Every structure is written in structure tokens, then in C-alpha cells.
Image 1: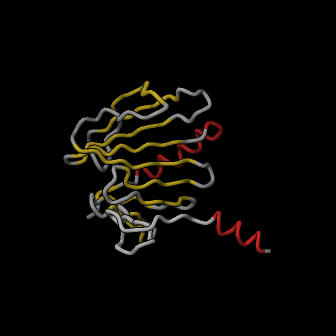
Image 2: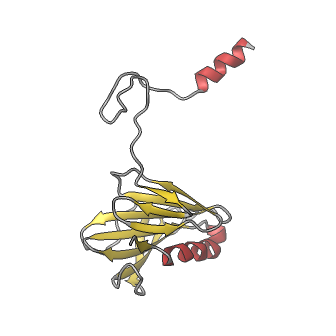
Image 3: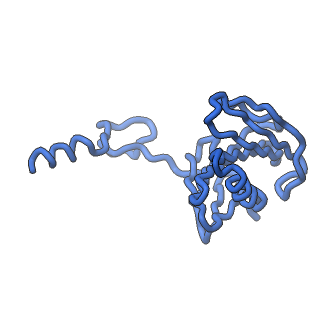
Length: 174
């Protein structure tokens, strides 16, 4: 019994002692950064950049850090498809480099409620068993929103379809 208790304690979360930059100011407490936004009434709202994304049935959302480029990641549970919303400064609608894949296709996309300027792209994985990344880039004011869909190879069509439904509903907050 004592060995089990010791094993549980040894495998528990480790917390560094002391107070560092970004800590809450309490020794032994991990630093916690404010999230980029919150889900309220089934809608994620980015509190800094003012865009909204509905959380449709079958989806869960995880906000990125308020200071990060990746604002929110959404996961479609039935297809294991991940959609990431990134924001970059500037107006260059060229897809940003990704580790493990190469942007092999790029074209003009259909206008969207966010922007008339839309680019679609595909990042082909270097590992043939890896997931393709489907990118949709929007010119939004003085930023570029790069939305990436990571659908599993065996459910690519279903995952991409589910992601596209969400992407079509992204809006700037009123």
C-alpha cells in the first residue's frame, strides 16, 4: 500500500518552486497565462482580435494563450479533425511555413464574410502517412488569419467537410 502511494506521488504533476516571470506570485504555483478568448453560449470569442467561431455539435475548443499567434484550436470529435485559427501581423496572404510539410498548392479562394481577399492552400506532409493541412487565409484589417484544417487520412473528406462548415461561420464580433 505504501509503495502504491509513493508511486502516485512520484507520477503526479511537478511544480517548480519559486516565483518567475509570468507566475501568479505564489511560490510553488505554476504560471498561468490568460487565454485568448472564451466560449459563451456555444460561441468562442477572441477577446483581443474580436472574431467569433461557433462551437457546433461534436466540436470542442481550446483557447490559445492571449499573447500567442494560435488563437484557438477546435477538435471535431467524430472525425478527429483539428482546426487551428492563427493570426499574423501584416497583409501577406502567403501561407506560413509549417514543420513537416510543404505548401504544394495555392490559389485564390471564394470571398468570405471576413474578407474579400481569400487564399486556399494545401500543405503536403513530408511523411506520406502524415496529415495534409488545408489552409484558408483571410486578409482581416492589418492581419492575416490562417485557418488550418488537419483531417485524418482515413476520414479526410468527412473531416474537411465538418471543418469547412465551421470556417464558413467565422465572423468579426459586432
